[in-house]
Image (cartoon, rainbow, N blue to C red; front, side):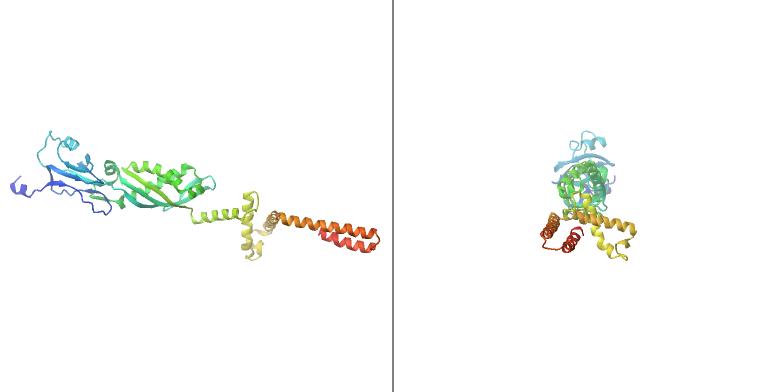
Amino acid sequence: MGIGSFIKKQFIDVIQWNESGDGVLAWRYPMQDQEIQNGGMLVVRESQMAVFVNEGQIADVFGPGTHKLSTQTLPLLTNLMNWDKLFDSPFKSDVYFFSTRVQTGRKWGTPQPITIRDKDFDMVRVRAFGMYSYRVADPRLFFKEISGTRELYTRDEVEEQLRGILMASMAGSLGSAQVPFLDMAANQQLMAQQVKGDLTTAFGRYGIGLDEFNVASVSLPEELQSALDERISAGMKGGMSADKMSGYTRYQTANAIPLAAQNEGGIAGIGMGLGAGVTLGQVMGQALSDSLTPAASAASAAADDGIEARLEKLKGLLDKGLISAADYDSGKAELLKKLIG
């Protein structure tokens, strides 16, 4: 090597990363034609880790602190480079820094509904939204599985991959949990706990630690939510029937009557034909019959008792000769008409 080339060559004495706080998770130190000076210093700050990579193969990993670079502190790289116990010349190696700070307040959501089996509704499609926090926990795995040899790797890029992992894990954990949708909606913490366990394992395969995971809302697609609202409303109407399904059927029938009346031909015009119209009438009649209150039944019974008393009184007047047989027959006919209808 000529003296001119030697003078132009630059040696690195201190290797460090001053994070800019712009969501960068992995950053490669810019080596260019520079070489690392024997005995140089590696500065790794809190919430950072540094990895030495030789020809694409991970060697030594450093945690926070100031490290003097030597064969003692670089044992794996020393082996890969076939150095003796001591090396006294500059060397080249790629150095990657990783931010291990917790990435807080990251939003997640289901772009498409997740279909799960449900005890109450058989099959439902669920939407969910919430927040989660994560960090780079294992730089070796993170480098091998996700970031690779890129110059830098950002939070937005990793979250594109995490989104797919999150959706797959959520579908699996909710599908196997067998927790009814109504229970999930009422206890979002229960749902979060179920998903977090499986998600922690899934993230761990990529060197990512899941710090927090919560569910802010659980909902159904609009058409299923409308059906659920209808079912809940049927139950809230109260006293339609002791049998819930019968009550729900009558509730739907009652809701259909005003809509049918607006069609041409009235109830028969809703497309069911005369026979279906008669069936609908029977359902309506039964519903109205079942809906009679105890008070109404008592009033009807009292009226019947009053008519019978008047018939007995009328017969007593005839026996005493106070009215004629014609008067008795006329009054009796009128009272019986009221009784029998």
